[in-house]
Length: 527
Image 1 (cartoon, helix red, strand yellow):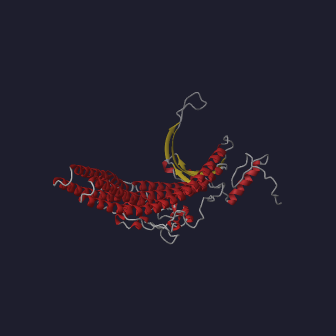
Image 2 (cartoon, one colour; image 1 turned 90 degrees about the vertical axis):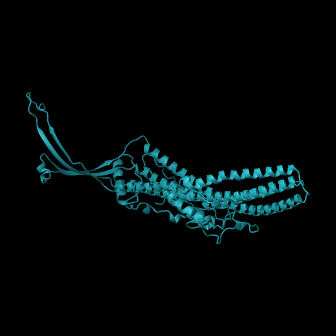
Image 3 (cartoon, rainbow, N blue to C red; image 1 turned 30 degrees about the vertical axis):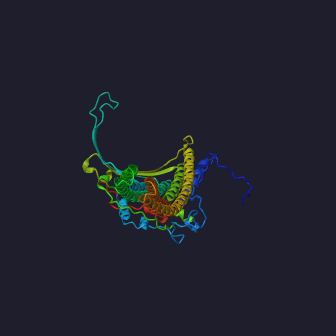
């Protein structure tokens, strides 16, 4: 009979086991109902617990990111690569065409200890999958033993003690115990570990991306310090020439000593800034050494003051972002893991069926130990079912469900953060590239102003203080330009990291792949 949509469905009472497979224990027919339900489950292979479905996530349906330069056609500066749906693949840092950076990145993948830690965590997670799958099989044990004993002489009813008896026992037992996965609890545990291994694999890829991006950022920061160093080296050289000129004019009586003092003060200030740059450069160099697994004492990078605009970067379309970021993949696999944990919680409501068998040989004399009449054996099943535990299983199930819901919120927040980061770094790279162009124009204008002011000073039209002001302004503009170029390069790296680098979800190992038996050398102890 079809149920009316207005008919109120009966609610589940406290005796009903929640999940895909229900066991209801009521009234006098409780035992018969339980047996019938159990047999039904055994025959159908039903697994308790909810079936996993990927939860919805906030995804943009826009054809392009809001801050992409394609939406600012009239603006000059940095552009994205075409076509719109293109994505980076593999070694994303090669897009910068910096051979030195390529070598460093290759060393990082091999020698970085943080990456190694995450890799070993992934290998441990794979081992835990095999630990869970081992429950599918029976456990076989043996415990050969020999005992010699003497009984008491005063155990009989006689008031007179006897000599007692002395005996030897040779035993060779073989015990077999097996818990068949009738109700899917072991399968849920295996799936939980498989999904956990996938989470670990995604975490490994996320850590690799983080370390790779950090290395690229430090590389451009260091090269930026080299560019600043060149600016200050040129400034010091120019200020030294200016000081020599003022001294010559003072010694010939053309100018006064005030100009010499002003020129000397300008030179000393530039030399102080020149020395200070060494602090940041040294720290970036040491940080790069640490990232590639080398002692900072043994590592150095030659000075090379070169900063180039970031290349066009393929950003793809917003709908691709969820497939490109390993942290989003880790969040989604965490949900699958949490859902499997709920399945384990449902499985606790069902009984554990254990099949045991014992056999072997036992004799009092060694020469008869393995004679056929010395054999013994026993076999039989057992069922263990918790009748009352104060609502423990239901409380645990509530805990697992709440944890799953929290993981859903974390997953959605990770997606939102990903969109925010992409838009942030798209805007930063685009705007900084425009600012660099304007700052280059400002530097050109300030250089022209300094040249004119120096000429006016040499002809006696203006005092040297005007030259000093022009020098100070030019140096500030040159430093600002170099800093903007550093920020632009770093922002482009951060954009690539926000896009997921060259990774996509197709590279995530499947549950079957994380379950593969390892080769002999994969778990060799590190030396």
